[in-house]
Length: 168
Length: 407
Image 1 (cartoon, helix red, strand yellow):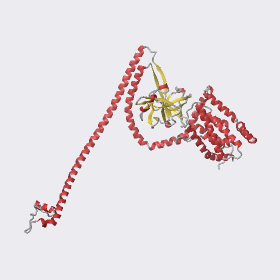
Image 2 (image 1 turned 135 degrees about the horizontal axis):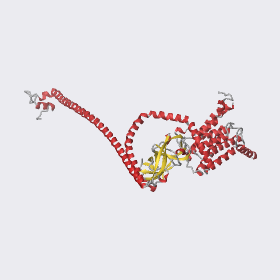
Image 3 (image 1 turned 90 degrees about the horizontal axis):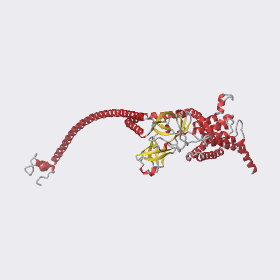
Image 4 (image 1 turned 180 degrees about the vertical axis):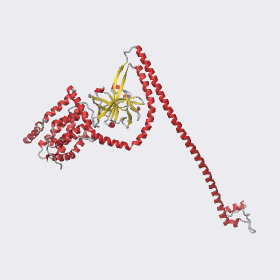
């Protein structure tokens, strides 16, 4: 395995990698939508935020997550603050699960994640529809929710390697 | 029971209020801040709008830079796919170009006539100027169909400015910044365009369905039966949101519903045209100047018409020349074919003669075969009454297999 010296610049980049990826994904709206599959999309920032908030990763600053939400709103064209609220709610739910759980288990986290994203997407849809009069297709939200849920396990297994490497 | 409730409350408190290592704000503070910003942006609070405008400028550029690697990969893939069908596309384009060239002349005449008529019926005309804009952010989001372009209020754009791909309508500006703006595409659920459908001049409204097409709604006077498949839809100009007469797409009848397949492919937008409009008032000018301008415009229009007619004559001459050349080629081909036909006819005559000869030879052979068998029956001898060898009666007798004519 590659080992970095702790003062190395590359090591610093490596430790900040989750936030860098989060910012790239909100700026680029990374969801593999160029695959041209009908209705296919998933919310990568939700998975990333939930995973690292759950692991209480010390470089994962909530204020920076909040700013990532503001950037996402600007890119997608949503009212300012909507994505920030969603991201912070993900952090709160993850933090609650971390505090209440003694023995963490991936499958339990996974289904809890489904509840969290469904709840947050419902809030998002309702707020946009009722208060901002946005015309949105609920089917897109449901499919997005489903794919985000399905992608959680493979992505979290992959992120486990990263987390393990950082702790080592 | 009490301890589990305590655990729950402790967990909640810890989740909301506890600041972990290196966290500057508690999550509760950030939640309130988010809700505060959402509410303020909901009521269009000016400082929030300014912050948003500033963020837009920064984020759009950053997003463009961040998207470069992904766009590069996707574009390379598209380019490779294009090269594979390059030659066929070239041939189709060449044909289409010829057709469009001839159509262009007639459309120029119509435009000049249209301008002339507008000058006659209106006291002002709209002068429009199309500028090219680059699409800097297009994430093809499944939720909101919008693009960001690199032209903003500094170039004279306004909320509602029409955006084109070539001559086809693609959307309108909904969010304006100094050097960039957000365009709502026609395919978005929130987009509705008043259209006219020809033939029939049927008025309707097309609403985006999140795909590269839109659904026709609110047809005036229930003229649904009169809509034909593949009819052309263009903007009607009702409500002054879009200019009138801009091509939008073609009607597609799916049985129960009518859809508009937009002319422009919104997934492939790289550059778009922005229409900057300005009003030219002519109402307060003096009569003399007015008359002079009318005379000038009329003479200009005549000149334009003459030029266009000359162009049309030129094109017609060229087409004529092409027809003559084609005619000559066809003539030479026809001569070649006539020669071939005469040669084939000769060959046919020779073959027919050969067939006739063959048939007579067959008959002769048959006679000789029968002659060997029945000659004794038909031949005249001193004991039997028959026929002299070589006479037609003898031949008849042989062919009748020995039965004499009188028998």
